[in-house]
Length: 112
Length: 299
Figure 1 (cartoon, rainbow over the protein chains, first blue to last red):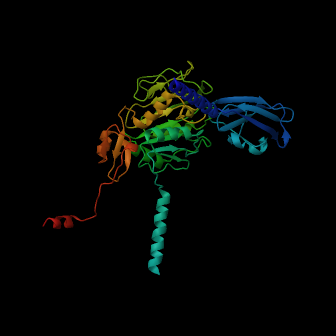
Figure 2: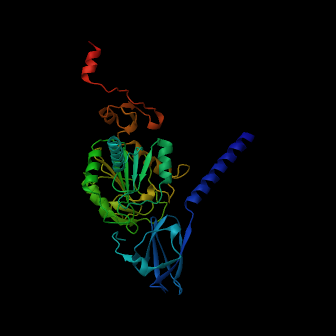
Figure 3: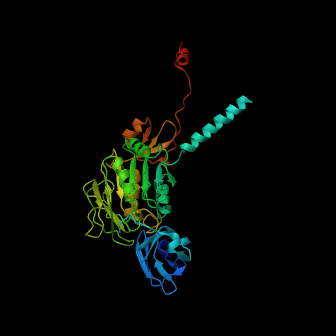
């Protein structure tokens, strides 16, 4: 009986560990950024994040700030009002403020 | 003095030659050069190294390194950050030469067209390496957890599998190759995994890098998705035509996963059913000599 309990505990423990590991793999983050254009804040701008698994969208407030939850992934292309920024950002290294004029935009060759 | 200078020059020349053709130690190449990119290969590397004994070199620089020693080459999202970063004629030629051995395989890995813009670079390379498969930009089934796409034609890489999981994927042109699996979305025009079905050349196309990389977790050695991991292992173990590859000890003491005929062609010793991690190869002892000296031993 004790042996069965030990085996059951081990199975449950293993399953919990597996669940924790799966959860760790899909830990979410939030991209928070203030957008400017030639140092002027960009209010009500449509922001789309392009990640490997899909896209996420948000709109900047009057102060040009937007926060968009991201489910997973490591890198992101950012589009502002339909213009793709000429820089590929790592999620962990997105600056607090992005000036679109300084970064520049690009012609996207991928389609969409 | 002059002798010292000559020796120094010779040493420098040797170093230059080593730098020009870096010698890699692995049997699998995960190539991110030509502006390529992936979303993390930790789980995939761990899976193949842990369960198959593979040794994976991750190369992020251009050009393509010397290919001798590799049996499997992944070319991952070339042109990702620069869609004009095409492979050179020399690189294409070296790939073509390397692909003339049936045990050698190229796996092209792409992603959906909102994220990946290098399809011209990928298709240009594919067209240059014979019997091409053609990448078609697109986006089907957003998000991770897509594992229910219908399987395609019977194929050694997917035989007995219920699925291979992906995230958000484009497709491959249905006019070329063998379709291995389609996206779940019924409007998708073609398969998201394709093989050209022949050993020479052996080329496999995977539409979505999330099938192999970390974000969706399918390759997690301690969890992940069993069928997807089996598919990944077969990429290492089986040729496009379905010939199994096992350990082959080569005359120089190295081990490669080769088919039996390819092992014989390389003057190697074949170990049926065994992977390289399970054998200890030793070089065939040789001694430099001349024909005259050999004959004199028997006079």
